[in-house]
Length: 310
Ligand code: NAD
Image 1 (cartoon, rainbow, N blue to C red):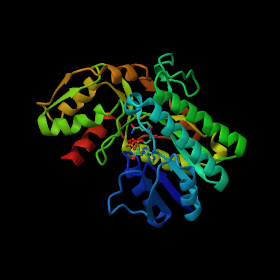
Image 2 (image 1 turned 60 degrees about the vertical axis):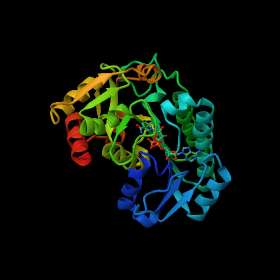
Image 3 (image 1 turned 180 degrees about the vertical axis):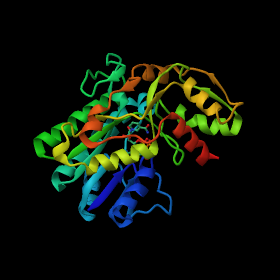
Image 4 (image 1 turned 120 degrees about the vertical axis):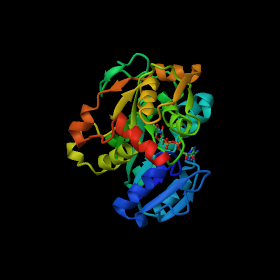
């Protein structure tokens, strides 16, 4: 069974590729990137360069490699999308539409990563329910809600096995994040190690859901391997591993680097986005339906990040 990853050189893709290679064998993994190439030692059968808005080119790759499962990660992230809303809509919506169309024609399963950005200012912020009000105020969020609905539609209408997760902010050290609102929680580690200080673009008390990358990668693989008869939702599962503020993250880092200092210079655009997102999602549906269980909490994540970044 062949697996294809779009957005393969991004923050998630660059970690999903080796994980898929470990589970299914490198000769079963095809990487699809855009402008960057994956590292030379990345264990994949082939690398293809493609603009995800080009449906014909995607179709050729899927047919040539007899792809059974597409992990569709190519997208513009929240802060980048707010700066270039027309382009974000084009890439995020037409990209997903092309993936679903090709999946329909070639009977592929699809993984689609949604986000806490799919919620909005009127969504309950604490214990955000799996099924709740979703009226996001960003173009990124609108593209994610539309994406969730389009996946549901393709599943209902055409039987495409489209599954997905609503990721919180993802923290990792291999590939820098691509311009999201939670990027501070990654940048802070390099700044703490190099300069002993970090200037944060979100307010000290901005509480958001977060997850360490190994948990995110495990969740993708586990969800795609889950028995379909156990899944009631299939798509857009809330998942979270921890929920913290910049102040709480800085305090945890200070346990390892006592002279670390954080100060704040608020970016109104990213603060506005963060203020419209939940502080803590309820992920019971994921836990019940396919056994979601994170391994890393805040102290474990901080220790591991510092260990690897040192
Ligand atoms: P990233 O920005 O690191 O990677 C996205 C990739 O998409 C990039 O490698 C880029 O080259 C590619 N891309 C952009 N435009 C393209 C185009 N026109 N054609 C083909 N490829 C194109 O993002 P990521 O953090 O790896 O996120 C992957 C997915 O997960 C996205 O859908 C994102 O919305 C979602 N997500 C990420 C996070 C997070 O914290 N990283 C949280 C929630 C959801």
